[in-house]
Length: 204
Image 1: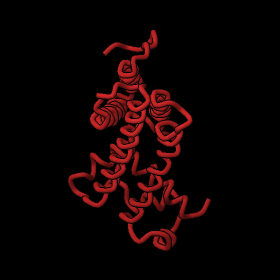
Image 2: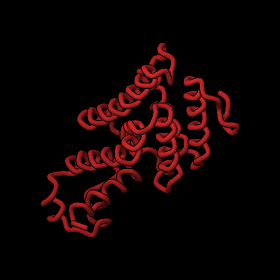
Image 3: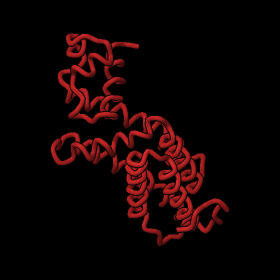
Image 4: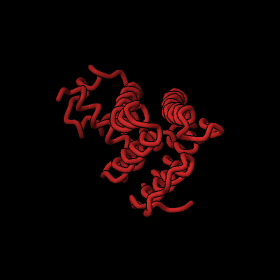
């Protein structure tokens, strides 16, 4: 692994665990076992590093969660949401999931005090909800979902519920909180599609 990638991976893990402002360059150097001169060879500042880390995190999330599900046109619209929820659950059940959503954590920490990072996060959140909105709209066009479904509002609702579920999963240190909320979302989407619920799926 290159020293640049070691710095990126280490910074991503530390920021996820401690937060941006509680992670110093010294912390990153020690954990990554790289020198200060090596750090500044690759990055101008901790702030610039944060933007690069955030960009990598976003690409990883798309590759792991959005691309194979919501943006996978080999699946039908309902199946895309099912696949998306499966992937969100896998993230939430992981060791990293206990730390909460890295994007939600950062948004809570910096939104009121760091406008450039807030704008990047806002754009990313909008892209995620717009992908779900397009999936709903495709389903409305093909008869999977009713034509009067408020696609934009529902996409925002789903994204907000997932963020809240990750916050509770982090607070309670209990993946069942996330699993319960995802189960509710699955049930709602099946209701909107007219598909029967699973016998194990909770009622709202």
